[in-house]
Each structure stands twice: as C-alpha cells, then as structure tokens.
Image (cartoon, rainbow, N blue to C red; front, side):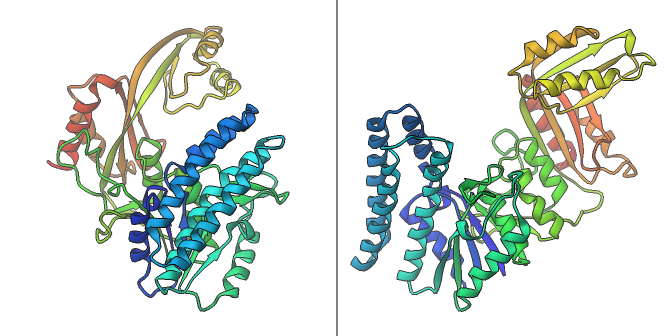
Length: 438
C-alpha cells in the first residue's frame, strides 16, 4: 500500500480538490493524508488570537468570513443536491463548534481544538466528493489512532495497533482519507505533531502500515540542483539519499521538513516528492540508496551571522570550547557551522534574538568579532573523503569569491562555504557551472 500526502495548496479550492481526486483514483488501495485548505490555519490562528484577547466579536467576524468561503467551495465542489447538503451540514457543524469557544475561557487546550478543525473539514469535503463520484472512500479519523507520548513524541506501537483496527473496519475501501498534523496527546487531549506537520503524519502512517512508498505531493516542482529563481540552467534532481535531502531541507530547500522523513529513513521506506501541477513528472525519490561519486545539488541559507572568538588562553587549554558552547546553549541559540584553530573558534548562527547577550558573555573569554548579512552555500552529494577531487572543484568554482569559513568533514554529504549575502548569486552560478554544466 502507498501513502500519499497533499498539502494545503493542493486542496486549496474546489477545482484543486477535484484534481487531487483524479490523481488518487487509479484502482490501487491507498491512504491519503490531507492538510487544511490553504489559508485556513492562518484564519484559525487569528480567531484564537481574538479569543485569547477576550474579543469574541473580532473572532466571530473571522469565523463568519471563513464559513462563507467554505460554503462557496461546497457549491462549486458537488454536483448533486444530496452531497451539497452533506457538505453544508459538515461546514455548519464545525463552525458552530468553533463558535462555542467564543463563550468560555480560552486556553492553549481550546486553541489546539480550534486549529484541528481545518484538517477535519478538508478531509470530510474530499471524502464526500469521492463518494459522490462513486469511489469506495472512507474517512479514517486521525484522532482515533495518531497519538504522542508524555514526551510529545509519536507513539509508534499505539499508532500501528489503532490504525490497523481502523483499516480492518473497511477492508473493501479503495481510498482511506485521513487528517495530517492533528493527533491526541498522552492525556487524550487534541494536540498536533508540531514539527513537519502533515509530512510527518504521512511518514508515521507509512511506517505503521509498512507502505511500499510514501508520496509527498506539493505544487513545487520537485527538488532542483540549484535555485531556479537565481541560477540559469538548473535541472531536477531525480534521486537523493535521506541524508542529502535533510541537508538540502536544512539549507533552504522548502520542499521537505528534515524531521518528517526520519521515521521513513529508519524503516527504509522510500519517499517520493511529486508535483500536483505536473503529475506525470517522475519527481524526486528519497531513499537510503546513495548514487556513488555524484554531487546532487547546491543550496543557500541567508541571514547568517558569523562570530569569531580569539584568545591566547585557548592555546593548549582544555574546557575552552565547552565554555563557549555553554553560552550559546544558555541563550537557546543553535550553531550552524564551526571552524577552529589553536587560538580561535568561528561559528555561525541564524537566530540573533539573544545576540547581544551572547556577545557580552563571549567577551569574558577572548576578543570577539562579528560579521552580519552573511550566507551559507552548501554543496550536497556523495562527499566521502576518499572521493578525490570534488572539494577541489567546489573550491575552484569559488576562486573569485571571498570565503569567510569552510566546513568539510562533519558529514559525508556536504561542503559548506560562508560568504557575504551580496556574493550569493555569483557563488551559486559559479558552482552550478562548475559542478553541473561543465
């Protein structure tokens, strides 16, 4: 069985829902994970914000506007009076439920219930549309099987057992529709998966049912070997190792959340990235297979700040780096890159919320210099140190660009360069020409 996930823009209108229905009805049994219609979650967050501020009038205004929008979608989606009525009843019940929260105390618990309504509505609408088209489709309520433990981590044993119970109720179904993102926590309260959202749901379901493949459908055209908005002559990447995909996701490729593919990676289930606007394109396959000796892609991460700490006290001293790292930890500031010498250490951060406090504390240990408006360029591929020549090619491409830091050897899958943001386009084009178009 395959697991398919469609994001908010893929179900963002009645027409898009119809297109998704065409894609999933090929006669094969599958589980389909859906997000809320695009824009819905933002509106639900806004409603919650008004309720926190004890402003029910403001909340009701957003609720009424959103409900009207959904009624219009219902009118466009269904062809028969019977299913139009079913759709309107679902919309009314969910929006009346949201309205009930305008009368009482509003806390984080109620907010999570309100936020869950978007996925519950979109899945009900698509399920009814499939049934109207004569497809054997059933709704699997995620709140019946998707659960996190006391550490807010998914509970795989519970998920597998309860999901199988749900599937066994409808053995004849062709399509199982379910909600992404939402779950219950260890105390039975409605909650959400936080990291990775619906992609994470699809990955967890894929592992629970031993899926042959997990498909993530978006309206982005697969993974490219460079950013097509900045660089000429880019091309799609057809195959990636899980580690390569995680590197690219971290360094700016918006297509996949690194956390969401961890369950699939450990269960050795391939993840295929596909484009709803080009459904016949082969997409990008992410798996545990490595294409030996190949550079796959280049990505960039902006808004980077570099910090250098120089101190003669570091020479032959133990514990110096620990003290430096503890400062970053105490201000919950993650480090991206790190390079060291006998008398200094350079690091990069992308979160400058506590930068001034970090710098003040670092000055106790040495001379501190800061470079802002920097950019990390990351070359991703099979970069094991025995593979001779790749680092030389990458360095050669960067020969006319001032490089502040280089990181190589921390992973078998990337080389990272820290440069000025103003040099980003030139660097990406030079690397693309050298590594892919040469």
